[in-house]
Amino acid sequence: MAARRKSQDISESNQLQAAVLNAADAAKAASQKIAIKVQDISKIYVSGDIEVKALQHISFELFQGQFAAIVGPSGSGKSTLMNLIGTIDKPTSGEIFIDGIEISKIKGKELASFRNKKLGFVFQAFNLINGLSAEMNAALPLILSNVPTKEIEKRTKAMLEHLGLGARLKLKPMQLSGGEQQRVAIARALINNPTLVLADEPTGNLDTKAGDEVVKLLRRMCFENNVTIVMVTHNPDITKYCDTVIYIKDGRLEKQEIISKRFHV
Ligand SMILES: Nc1ncnc2c1ncn2[C@@H]1O[C@H](COP(=O)(O)OP(=O)(O)OP(=O)(O)O)[C@@H](O)[C@H]1O
Ligand SMILES: [Mg+2]
Image (cartoon, rainbow, N blue to C red; front, side):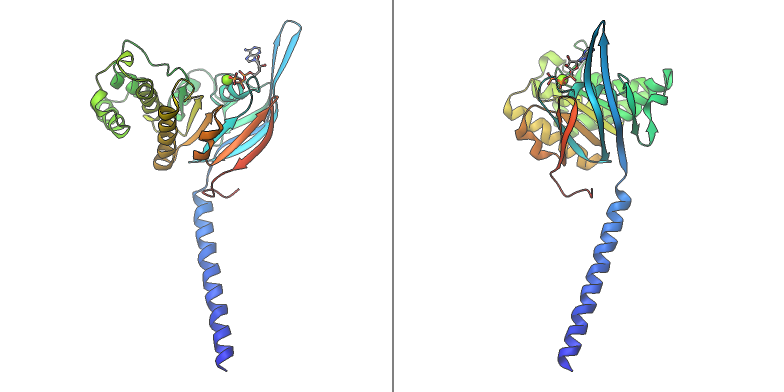
């Protein structure tokens, strides 16, 4: 009798545990929204008689809030892929969806506005405007979005303080270290609360320590702001901070590795 009671208790507790786990899974799945869907894209550059198949039949999806690295040898097509996702260039075939919108359908002024509101860019060479202060550089996407001046000041100051640059607001890029300049570029990329940040070799011009800090910062921003980040890197050491790594070789997706269990795949 006692043994039957005990086995019933265990089975009930297993059922309860299973129900709790299912609920947790369901909640996680509900919060897991696809932010980018890359569907069978190819890119062929043609110059005269020469054709370069820069990308061939690449497909993958990333979740909102996921931190992805793109890794591959020089010339494998990483920057081409970033340019296609970033609406800078168009694929020869295939489709890319950002927040469910097929980006090749967005044209003209709407494309400029889409880029400014939904995308943030971080480059290897920082690409800050030398004549403007850190504060003004970070504020550019808000200025372009016609946000009221008082709000621009408030949001920019808060963002730069959050990134540890509170004492550097008025300094120009040349007065900042490489790591600080890249943090200003990250502030600029995030200031408009984009869906997606594209970072092509953001640590390429930094030493190991500053590079590591920049990647940790990107990871923190990814977690805190639920923004999807795609980062190209040559450095295998920093992919450990990412949720997933996409390996590109000769223009093809070689494999996708899942590093963290934050997302169901
Ligand atoms: N505008 C272009 N016209 C013609 N070919 C191009 C163009 N842009 C890139 N390519 C070619 O496409 C291929 C992929 O280039 P891509 O810049 O995407 O490589 P990558 O992986 O970013 O390399 P790296 O690590 O050196 O930055 C290369 O063979 C390159 O020569
Ligand atoms: Mg490149």
